[in-house]
Length: 70
Image (cartoon, rainbow, N blue to C red; front, side, top):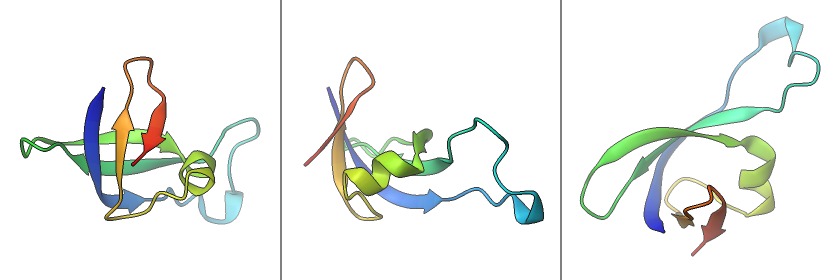
């Protein structure tokens, strides 16, 4: 389990073409660990909304890849 803080969320822009068929909207989520290590992880936009996660929020990234809000 890894605790991460959301620094920034970037939603992709597909312009006039829209999202390609069969593809889920995936955001680039900039996160920071308690030790100051930063990285970018892809998270489905719908999952962020379902878990009510936004910039400034924290979550746990579980070993199996699932996300648990704090």
